[in-house]
Image 1 (cartoon, rainbow, N blue to C red):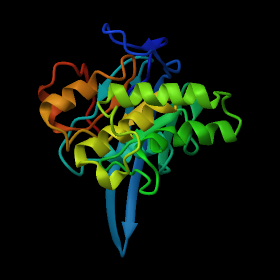
Image 2: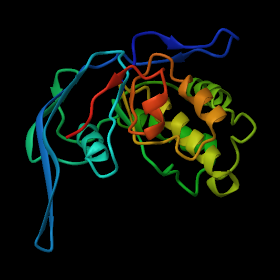
Image 3: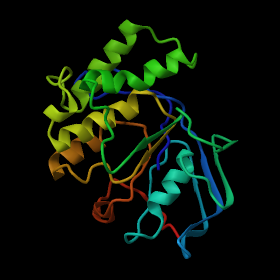
Length: 230
């Protein structure tokens, strides 16, 4: 998981600047989660603890089924822990928040919205809830910049069914960044991308931190932290 540092994301080629939220510290303390169904009891997490500093990139590494995705969902606020506590930016996690972005293994795009409107959906919902005051021209400019940064500049008016699998993942990635989260959680979102595209996308959120339980990170020197989930 990752928390963005202060500042903007821009490359040396002069791409538009994209504002980022201040990074948030993540503290996971003795978190446990057990799933029960039909008399079967599965312990997904037991005593999981970790700390992620603002601006730090941390990867959860481990075999399939060891609880990586479960921990990400708990930090995102999409799943309640049975034991332990999670704080982000010093505040207890009690449910989902626009400050915590989440990228899933599948893109989860709205099929009835264009790529541009999928990316802008989060910021528009935040504005309707009074969480920011970005006007339409500013949102349009940022959406256009994000489309360009993820290589979808010519596909803003395309619907999800008109995009390839990898393009849908990139659209979901841009949508997560559009809300300016202080924490970006990533659950193998680049698994459907080729190595070249995946490397390019990994450089887009300069200053953002992402928790990405993907086996490729075991051999990727860009990812500095390794915290196995228990």
